[in-house]
Image (cartoon, rainbow, N blue to C red):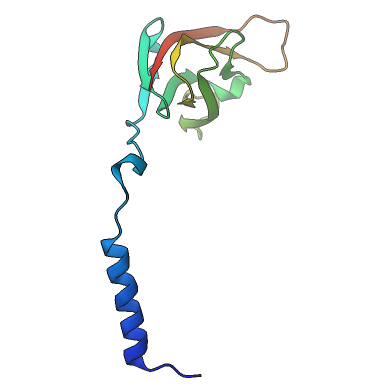
Length: 140
């Protein structure tokens, strides 16, 4: 069955008009989540303020050739969800240093410690080479 161009044009025009006239009530609009917050070694011991849903990137120096990585330490707050890590920097230089970027999302309101440790995952009885901690203050 072939439809005329006029019929198809009228249908598309009618749908476009409907879509443009339909508005989402303010009560149903999504709240804007602030841009990502960033912390680095210089922020150790400080407090970082976040909103629920906001992302926190922690940027710390690492040397991947040693086998050590940054990871979430026991006793860290449950107000943040760990999303993963990526490396930036001198990947093509053997033994070179990189910046490890650990990403977290604030999932609940409250205040608590974010604790990270730099260690080799298979050396469970060896203390971490380095530690990093800060306090997160998450609001709605």
